[in-house]
Image: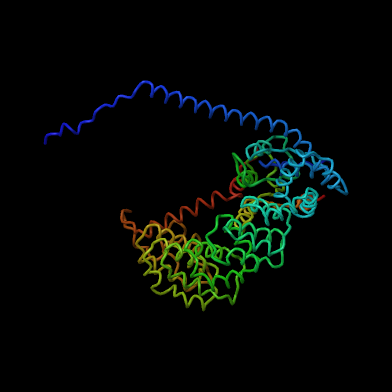
Length: 414
Length: 126
């Protein structure tokens, strides 16, 4: 094939004047950036140098008034401070309020009132922009000062971040309506998925009383986007407070959700409900539900839930699944779910109906797979490999956590 | 008799609170800015603190790792020295890990310095 001469690339000559101008503009831009950066750095450094001794003096005075006197007299002290000192003291107060609770935190909150932070925060929530509202909510949480609920409900529902920050104020102030108003703030009126902070807030609010969360989920779960559904299920999984008569049909419904991540989260949310026979009958964990699940990650979550339940029925279901599981990662999850009930010391004596593994101990083959390993060691059953890996991992984990071994072996102090 | 304490925390605010509170209570303090400095302080041949206060998450060496080293008797300090973990990691798993590592007490931030001092005094039998 002969190339078309007309398609050959031709060099374009750039006029020297244009090239020079481009270089000059580029160099000038670079110089401007350098000058501005240096200017900001120098100004910031000068500001820091000026404030460092002020901050040190304020910190010393703050601690002295907090711990060294019967009465801190915050109002009198604040009245003597310059604007710069008050600004720096607010910064210090922000840091200390995050670390302290109890009487000391209460006393520091009074310093916040003396500085007028509480009133300013209420004004900012009502009239400020997005960042002013967020900043104000953070201050009110630090001061453990819950404002009027209508202020929060009217101005703090625009974004998930504001919803979480508003609920966090109620949590910090330990208000009696935390669970009900908190869940309303977080999940009422077209909520969207949260940041990590929001998930943590949802957890903290729900931990005080999960009932409002469960009621809201039972009513609205299907209308939420999958990311939020997953987050609510995640929170449910970690709640320590189990509600006996709660309507968890929404969790069971989520086991059939079209999104694998939601189905996976739903299985894990059921970790703490192994005792609920009625719920388990509705789930049908021992039936074909797990075997028919197409996503290995969801099957892995189902195995973990069965492992958390840990009774004879659940362990039997796990053993049956071990025969059929085809995915490597799901097999490892299955082995890890089964391991606490079989190794390293064999089955729980209280579960005498479960036969012990062939060789027993953490390094033996998986239960029911005693004949899977060939005499030459080559033919290792896939599940047996997962079981051995799990056993080894558990053994090293125990070694790493052991705090008595070296001493009992006679290691001497240097 | 003067009491002594080793504090290891990378947070300046926490260090300042502990220094102020424990100094006022009559403790001689060795203050460390990270886990490795804490390990060196506890491995000093003269190290004989009445109490050790450790943060969990610290640069160079985690508090739980340092505590396990102490409990295994790998440092010069008495392996049975009372240790309080002071940390922002407050989930059940974190608390259990801290106690399994050999901590006598596990306090989460934000914390009450008065409560901490009461626990210190109970541990050392003041």
